[in-house]
Image (spheres, rainbow, N blue to C red):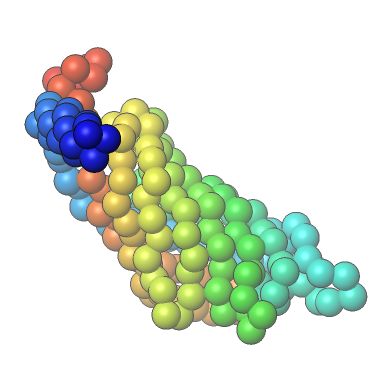
Length: 181
């Protein structure tokens, strides 16, 4: 008796799940932006803020934590159209200094997505060049997906990286302002 009741309950829950999925609109957006991170000098945009005692803090030293407010542009050139900013926190989490835990927001400040954000969480290393998209705001409400990151320029004090954002949104049909999205 209890077993058949459990099976019936699971079937009912499955129907509710399928019904809720059928009442959403899915959209997929692919965007490419270029991040410019300056690690020293007049235009510095990434700063080390914490690290282990008696160890020289660096962007590749285990335990180092930094904050960043990097500009995003349409192409790899710093002179190309400004798209927004990548703002967040990174921490070197591997003992060999090759893996960074990233928690960041991509904030669009111009163009079609101005005022919208995409929220990121994950690790970044030579082996893992993807970060999870865990949310968003405004035009990217209900966002999930992932990003890929490829270095374009790597110098001592400057990193330029290409970010490809693959954004999926499952927006409920009854969500306010759905027609404007």
